[in-house]
Image 1: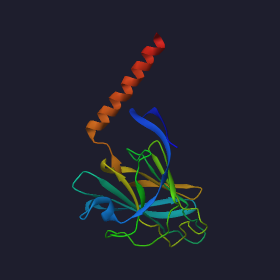
Image 2: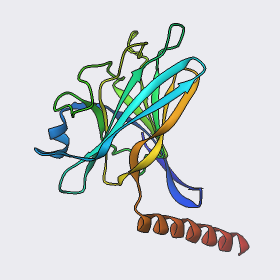
Image 3: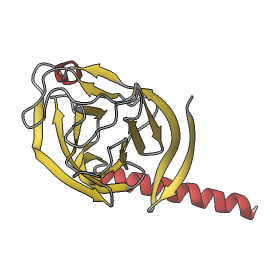
Length: 207
């Protein structure tokens, strides 16, 4: 099921949507063709909370057609007494909707990432530009101390920039990761769209 409406956030017009997405296991070459190319360097982000210590590796890969695969791998580097990672979220993942292609890599694992790892649940969730991926079912799927996730992918035609990633165990640890952002011209159009909507709404209320 997919729902959509409009919200104004930070001066930008954004689509409010909610959808359950089935995660697909694929090799990187199925996503981007025979010669996927990295965009920038691998980024490793430390994320800590009271009972949680993790690192998230992130990087974008692309093909010659303007499509990007955003890759993420979560590592639980906590100490005795810390909690497992049960959820990973990204915000704002620009362009996320009910057609968002996401899943985990089964082959062609790029340098800097590790093969194997804990698999996410079969379904993720998209709400507005918030993407959520779960590691709670079946029992044992959570990312315990010393474990890592499989390499997750999310597809987008937005260019790489910086967004926020969160690892969650009940508490939340956050940090900046590689993710899709609108180009400057797109930001202007989104802002203008929001302003036009508000003006029309104000005019309608005044009549």
